[in-house]
Each structure stands twice: as structure tokens, then as C-alpha cells.
Length: 115
Length: 494
Image 1 (cartoon, rainbow over the protein chains, first blue to last red):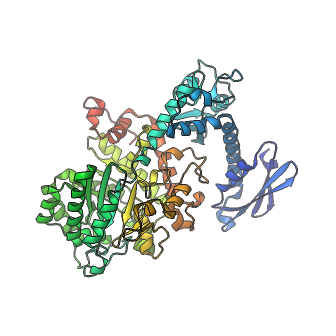
Image 2 (cartoon, rainbow over the protein chains, first blue to last red; image 1 turned 90 degrees about the vertical axis):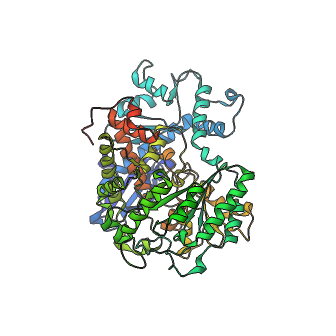
Image 3 (tube, rainbow over the protein chains, first blue to last red; image 1 turned 135 degrees about the vertical axis):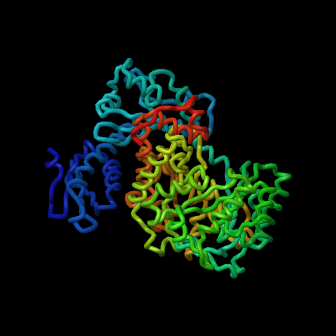
């Protein structure tokens, strides 16, 4: 299954195809950032429904396990998407905690808008 | 509370801790280990209310099914407590009394000058001017630390600073403290009597056993710096008392792989703790590549050293590793710690500031080290040319504060360890020419992530004896006092 997502383009280049309906741009980029020490990463749309993440090693390809990086990326982008989904559910609470920490407000209940 | 879901999920960050568990950390720094299965149930609103995991998550403020306002109030209070360092703007004031030094250490990060180069001395006039600025600080606590070079080579300015600050403090009535950072080799009875009278603390340097110490800490005149150090350490302790002297080690390739020997040496010489510090790549430490090591090697030795120290404590020898203690305080309590590198925004300029010999002001020791290397990127101003407001509310400080909040920095913003960690904008700039830096290649990030994860592994092991040791460090109490008894069982894991 994972092999359908990770596509080997050349010996030292891999492509991961992600569905736009599942992964947001923020998650795709945030996950990619974590691998910029080892790889040059290009992100561009493949078609209206998919986004492509291209991985190319920065150093000698023999020193980099590109397939492992791509697999780790899959988990990372999943984690990042979960973070974004959760953020939507409690984002206003986080802001409220910080705001309340620095500027005590008398009627907290008026400020709370949760699901 | 909406009826749409059985509970409200509260803000948290998560990280995969191992193959089957995640670590969750909420906005106040409370944490919880959860299995992947339970995590799926938790975020899918599928946890039954009488389930243990549900109750744990509720009591640790990861979810709420009752009055949310009270929980937000509580989390906000904890958050505010953690950020309390912002109220103590600025408490640590370091003064470069001179760049002259009687040592020529192989790793000198400020590239010290020889003992005859008086042009690198801070004048008493400059010192008084700096003290005037120090007392403009709104902080109720003021610590003045004399740095160098070797500050004892400019003894008159040290004395002038102490007496002028004490005089000013008669009116300001702040909690005033002095520290001299010295290699100790030039100390004598007269100076010690003076320091005792003025209640001054000593911070000195010890890299380990004689063979290691002498290899990198070289006297300009030749001979063993270690032998002289030992003699003067004894004299200092006799006059000031043992609690007035602490030591810092500089970790090079020479002591990195002998970390337990370093600990033994510290204990032999009567120190009650050690701070495992990675080498800061400034000055000669940057040039001298034979001293360097990969950060992964530092972390490996750090772990070995920490396990060794825990074992010693379990055998009844009280000894502390200070960096772990700082991190553990941040993980296990909500109290702020004063360490510059573990703040957000960065503590540079907020927790501490450094005044160069000529009155130039930098936000941290590393920033003035960078200036000594020819890059004055972080020069905040000068006490003769700029007002206090211009220096502390100028372009440099504003930029540091804006760009060193881990809550918004790439790679930090989503990190589960964020609330325990901090930013080092000067190091970021040194490595990437950008004060935001690049986390995937940052040694600072790698080091802190690995060490924090290791501490969580120790916490997760939940060995009662080991936990007692950690709490004895955090609370600065004796292990027996923590246990309420003399202990008889020892952990086999460490």
C-alpha cells in the first residue's frame, strides 16, 4: 500500500503523492521542513486532486536511506495533519489561555466559544 | 459545553515516544503517556467516561467535560507562572572587567589578551556608568557578574563596581548579589577578605582531573594551572566558605569520553554538582578543531554521566547535574527557571545582559564573543552614547524578542517539548546567519530534544528511588529528607 504512495523516479529521487482532500498545505510543508537537513525537497501539484513531494539527497546518495526518509515523512505528515485538525477544535482555547495568562479578564465565560 | 461531543479536547502537542506510545504535553507543561490505540479513541471522542485513561486525561487537563472556565483559569495561571521570567527584566548583569588573562586556554571563547595589555581594561568611570544603567533595570533582583579575561587582573575596577553598586542600592533596596568568574590563580588573602566582607560568590572553572585540566587550561607563564588552582581553591573555601564557590566545566574532546572521571574529580574537590555544557563554538573554541565533537557524542556522554551521578546519589553521595535539574524543574513543576537558553522569547537581554570593557552592551555572553570575532550584529548600544531605553528597547532587542518565540518558530511551533525548551538566536545566527535558524540542522535542537527525551524515559521508568533523587535536586533537599527516612533499597537500573 505504502509503495503506491512512494514512487521511485530515479536512483536518487523519490516522489510521494498525497491526496489534497486528506492533507492540507500546512501539514505537507511542516512535515517537509523536518527533512531539509538530509534532502532537497520540492513540493508541487501533480493534478487538481494530488500534491507531489519530491525528495533528493543533499549528500552522497549512498549515505542517505531515501526510502526510510520517505516512510518517516508519511508518518510525519500524518502527525502534522492531526495537529492541524486538533488545532481547529481547540485553537480558540489556546489563544484564550495565553490571553488570560497575561491579561486577566473578569468574565471568562463570555469569551468562550467552543464546539 | 456543547452536546455535540461528550468532552472538549484541550490544547496539547504530541510526539511519537516509541513504537506503541505517544507523549502528550499540554499548554501548561503537564504531560501524559498514551498508547496509540487510546490516542485514537481520545481524539475520536471514543473514550468512555469511567475509563482510567479518560480520568487521567481529565485530571491532567487534556480534556474537560464540566466547567471549562475554571480549567482555563488554572492553565492560564500555570502558563503565567512559567513566563514569570519576563517580570524580572533584567536580573543578571555581566561586566567584562578586562580581556587580560594570565591563562591562554586552548578553547578561550573570547580570545583573551596577555597580562600587560591594559588597554583592554574597563575603567572605573565606565564601571560606574554601567552600574547606573544596571539600576535602571525594573527587576527587584540584581546579580552583577564580573567576567573577563581574568577580572582579578583589574581588581580596582571590581572593587569600585561593588562599592558603587552597594551605595546606589541603599536607595534602590534591590536584592543585590555579586559573582566573580575567576580562574582563582590570582586570588589572595586580602582579596578574599574583601570578597567575604561584601558577600561575593565565586564561579570558577574545572575541566576534570589534572591531566585534562592542564591540557586545555594553560598558564601564560607555563607550569600546571591545576596545581595552582587546587591551592587557591582551598584558600578560597577556607575564607569564604564552601557554599560560596561553584565551578563550570568546558566539554572538549579531552573530557567528553571521561565524563565519569570528571564527576569523580568534582566530588573529590568538594563540589556538590556539575553542569554538563557542550562547547560553544566561539573564539579559539571555533578555530581549534581538535577540541570539537559531534553533538550526538555529547548527548551520549551526557546520558552516561547522568546515569553515573544518579547511581552515586543512590549510594548516598549527594551530587547534582545542573542542566538536568533545570530541565526537570521545567518538566515536573510549573516554576520558571532563570537559564537564558531555555526561555521563550529568548532570555538574551531579558534574563541577562553583558557590558563590554568599553561600555558596549550585548544581549548575551555569546553575542559579545561573536563581537570579539569581528561581528557586532548584536550590539545593543553603548552606555556613554545611548540611553537605557534606546539600548533595551532598540532594534536588536526588539528583533530578538520578535524572532525567538518558540511558539512561532519553524520546527519549534509544533514540537511537544516546546514548553520545556527555548531559543538561542545568537547561536542560530552563528550557524545560519539568520536568528530564526534552521532546526533540522541545529545542534542546540538536537541536544535539547535528545536530553529531554532521555529525561522523560527516566520519568517513565518510574523507579521510586530514582524519582526521589530527581526531586531532591529540584527541591534542593537531601535525599533522606525527600524520602522521610534513611533508604535501604537501591535501583539496579542505574
